[in-house]
Image (cartoon, rainbow, N blue to C red; front, side, top):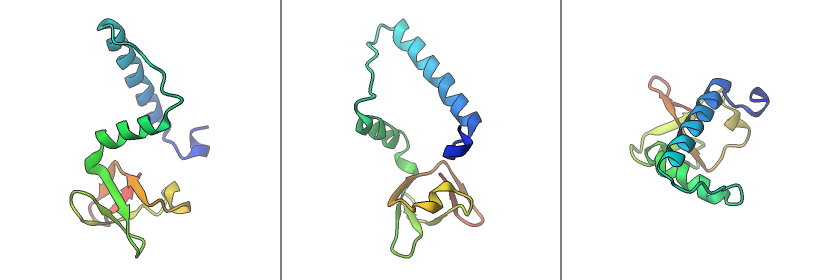
Length: 103
């Protein structure tokens, strides 16, 4: 199912382990666990806050510009994002030779 949705299975497994660890700490320190299924905007805000230095905006020429470095970046040719070309992306890696984004 991960492959059909363009998600790396190992990354998803790592995310699940992190989730379990966070739940364990919240229980240990008696922090209330509140479901956020009804508030996807809150989840997006958390992700963007954590990765604010990895945000890029699409430019009129089809490239992307990072918010911090202002360097010109492009989606990796094999990225699933090439099908939709979003206005904004959060990336995790930049190929220094071609400035390809891995989102």
